[in-house]
Picture 1 (cartoon, rainbow, N blue to C red):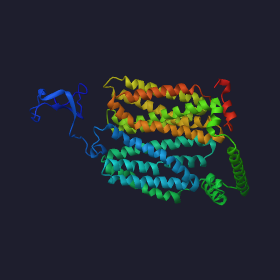
Picture 2: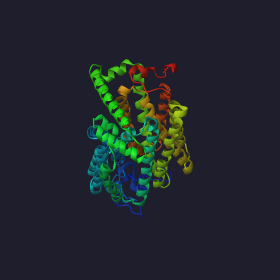
Picture 3: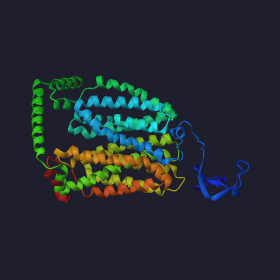
Picture 4: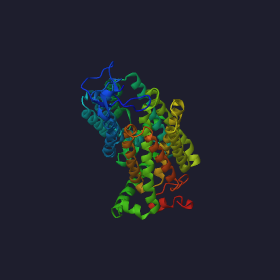
Length: 469
């Protein structure tokens, strides 16, 4: 092993070697140290792989950390592109249409990745799939929120996140059983082609029908729901719903006329100091949450032990985190839950950084508690951010925070490469720092538990005034 520099007392560099000072080729039997210049490192010409059924092997990415990490980041860029496309389709042609298209596009574009013979082709397929298919979850979220009443929205959101984690666990099991990446691609995506039948199996959102003035179709859906639930819908109730919808449409038209005479939203935000502070603070929470949430999932496969079990354990640890938020938010309040969850997550990252080698079980426990905590934040942040802003501008300001949060999910796939290039614990230093900062920033925003949704900038500014926030 005189050819390779040491990276620790027990490991050697797998990507660089010492340059030769002799023309004689080294062999397993004869390889003295004086044949090599220990002051001159060069890249290895070829690499030996333990596994030959991976993307890393097929595209020779073993010593190219940044190209390997770019795959995850390019997927997030595609998701950013998907959001406005999906939003347009959803508002124009309906939630059911948008969800079906996203799910089916994910299936056939993802399956095409099987035929990607080059790294560029693989990356293009990743970007295309996320651009035309990754809006499915957000569309499903909107559809569910429009179906359930306000009382059950937090519960419904936690349920959706739970199924997301169950999907991650299922994917880990399938990947364990089908390790070859091309076969795994087919195993994951081919069954999803059946999602084309969503269009005929699902009902459209009643709220979307009403917003488009398609009252007969809305009434048909409501009657179907009532029949399935064993309830009766009177004609009087349906007529009242129609009148309410027409009144809402008139109000929306009035609001549209008023907005044409109002200054731009950014001007309104700068006129209200408290709203401006929230607009500066809430994106930091979202960046932190997505950065840690996805970062912990991605780095789980680098932990000691079975990488499939580690990934599934991290995914499973998220589920109690979602339901902890459901349990505590209406009882303890939004701020205490967020602060404690952020700081528990930070404490776990700090503990993981200083954990001695050989403590695999304890390291895994800390890792899972950190994942559980950030999952609690994930559910809480949706509720809290929406409550901080007025009804008229809630969607725009909420979307701004959510969009900024994508910065975290873009950076998360780069953390393994950063750890390899600088220090293996550096990603966890960043996770801890962001979590500590975000917990502190919660102190400067108001508690919203028990407050009604504000309708105007003035009402939103008054939330928590008695706290001095």
